[in-house]
Length: 189
Image (cartoon, rainbow, N blue to C red; front, side, top):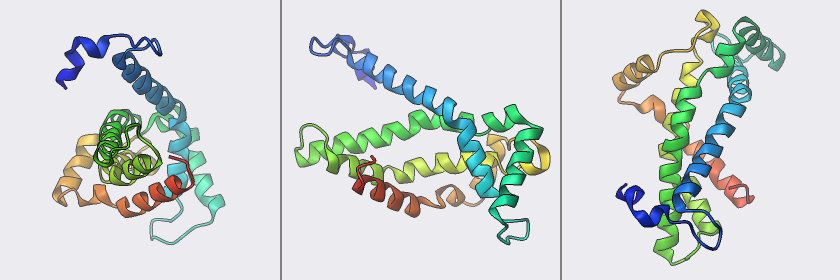
């Protein structure tokens, strides 16, 4: 991280008129703005998915799941819209570090020069084990909404995960890697 304090990192590039530091701030800022903007949609989608099964684990109709999610949003619109936002904001930083590390590392290892399609594909797949725990914490925050109307505290989530050696936070990593691979193959990286 010492590069952040290097004068050359703050030097404006004559080609594009932006320093690497300004580029980093713009990228992270844009990611943060996008995250805040799409959080209500993500929260609603995840609540509908969460309510796709009843308390006994039996699948319910999509209409019933939507009705449950709508009830949560009507009862606590601000809380529901902002649920999971802090893990997502942390994820903006935590997800980008491994993704760009793999992107640039792969490009360097194979001598690509500029990162290309293969590097983007490798980065999407290899960063999944780092990204998935953030996604799972975000989802866990919404589990108490149906009963309490508030999100589950982060420390409670971490205590519960710790009791199980954090394995619940990695649930779904393999499907996420498959999704990343499919997206990459379709050029959606």
